[in-house]
Length: 86
Image 1 (cartoon, helix red, strand yellow):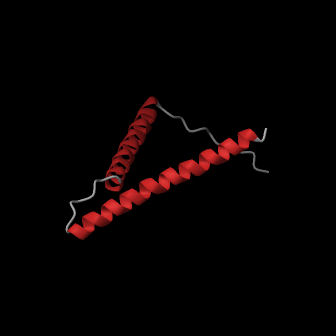
Image 2 (image 1 turned 90 degrees about the horizontal axis):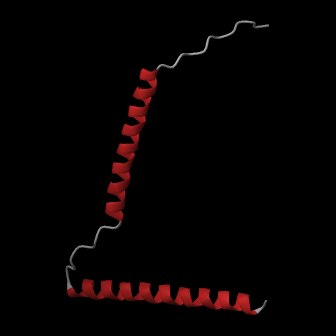
Image 3 (image 1 turned 45 degrees about the horizontal axis):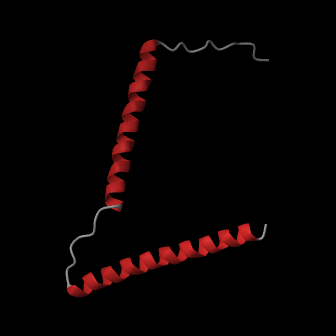
């Protein structure tokens, strides 16, 4: 049998403050990465190159709005139907 007991590692206040500083630096770098990613995702579209591109962009925006409204109407109908059956 192994009867040797390992001595616990002593953690000093300097170790704790160093680890805290390292973790804060990691958090700051991750925050910068997340902000950069969010900016690239939600960046505004560049100006339309041609008239056809502008028309297609308007059409796509209109279709997205229409699709959102139709989805909302379907959800509202299902919610109303759920509460009427009670």
